[in-house]
Structures are given as structure tokens and as C-alpha cells.
Amino acid sequence: MENFINEIILGGYSLMNALGYLWFFIIGFLIYGLNEADDRDVNSTNTPKKWSWIFWFKDNWRRYFVTFLSTYIMFIFYVQIVGHEFSNFEALMLGMIGDGVGAKIKKKSTNTSINRKQIMNKINEK
Image (cartoon, rainbow, N blue to C red; front, side, top):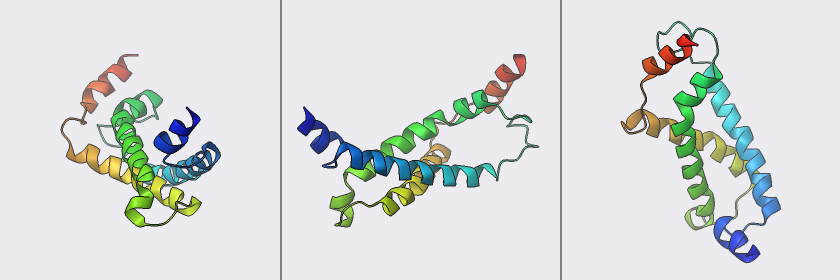
């Protein structure tokens, strides 16, 4: 079972290595997310005036799911694609790039788009 987890699920990395890479991925993900949050138009009718965790989650959950899947795929096949071992720096870069991929897919896909006005109405009803 441990061999299955290390070889198949973690792509040949130990659990400790994978957790270390996850840490740097999260840092990269936060850097990208905070830079993107600066671009939010607070005067837009599509976003609430006051910060809402519910709105944020409902507006972005599909994007973060796609980010998780695309990042996991890039992590597992990294050695085959690039030709050298994964490093902490690459985990940081993957965190920043991975969310960018998820954001781009969310913008281009009609299947992952949501009705922001409907979410706003639900939030304002409370």
C-alpha cells in the first residue's frame, strides 16, 4: 500500500517531499491570488461592496478545482516533461502558474461559468 501511494499517487516522491512541495505550491498560489485580488473592481455590480467569503467560494470553487487537477497532473508528469527532478523553486512557480491555468480555463469555459447576479441576490437576501 505504501508503495502504491509513493509511486502512483505521489509520483515517486516520499510523503515528506510531497508535503514540502505542497508548502511551496501554496505560497506560490497565494502570491498569484493576492496579486489578482488587487485587480478586483469594488465598484462593479458583479461583486459585493463588502468582502464575502461565501461569494468568493461560490465564485471560485470550480476554478480552484481545475487548478488542483491541472497542478497535480503537472506535478506527477513533471520529470517526464522537463527531464529533471522537481525542486522547491519549481513548486513555487507551479503554484503561481497553476492558478493562472485554472483562471484561464474558468474564463474560457461556459461549463464552469456561474451566474454572479444570482449569487449576489442570495448574499443580499441574508
